[in-house]
Length: 291
Image 1 (spheres, rainbow, N blue to C red):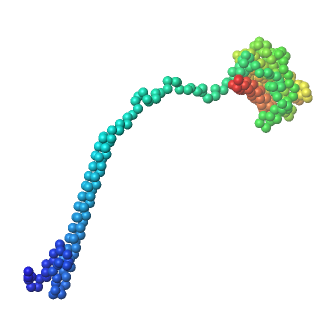
Image 2 (image 1 turned 120 degrees about the vertical axis):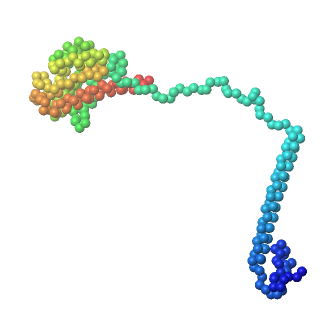
C-alpha cells in the first residue's frame, strides 16, 4: 500500500507499537494521536477488569448456592431426627406454694405522751418532789435559781390559800407537790396539783379567781414571803395536772408592774414545771413503745 505524498502513515490504536508504520522520513511524531491511543487502551483495560469481576462474583454466588443445596440434601438424607422442643409435660410448672410473706419492718408510730399524763389510769410512774423537781438548782437560759424547800401532801387544801383550797378539793385533787426557787432576793413557789382526769384539772384552771393561789413555801434559809404582801401569781394546766406559781420579794416589798425580775422568775419556774410534766409523759410513752 502506498500513502499520499507528504501524509504520515496512519496509526492504528489497536496494534502494538512494533506493528505500527514507521515514519522513516524523520518527521515529528503525532503526539495527539499517541495520547488518544493510550487513552483507548486504558478504557479497554478497565472494561476487561469490570467484566472479569462480574464473572467472578457470579461464580462465587453459584458455588455458595450449590453448597447450600448440598448441605440441605445431606441433612435430609442423614436420617438424623430433627431436634424438637420438650413437650409441655417436661416443662416445669410454677410452684403451687404461695410466695413467702414477710412481716413489716417499719417501726410502729410513737405513742402520744399526752395520753399518759391525761389520765391517772395510764400515768402510773412514781412521782414525788425529788422526781418532779430534781437537783439543787434550776437553770433557764442565763438565769440560775437555787432550789429551796420542797413539800408533798395529799391534803391539797393545806398547800393553797384564798379560794384555791375549795377549788382543789371540790374537783378531786389527790396531791399537791411544791418547791421554792430563789434568785437575787426574789422567791418563787411552784405548786403542782394532781387530779384523776384532764377535765378536773382544766376546770380548776378555768374556775380560779384573783384570790386563788398556791401557798408560798419557806424554810431552809428562805424567809416567809407573799403572805401579806402583793405578789405575782400564775395558773395553768396540762393533762391531769394544774400548776401554779407565786413570786415576790423575800424582803417583804410589794410587787409592781415594773418589777421585771419577779415576772421573769415566775415565768421561768412555770415553764420548768410544764416541761417536767411533759417529760413524764414522754418517758412513759417511750417505755410503753419498747415493751
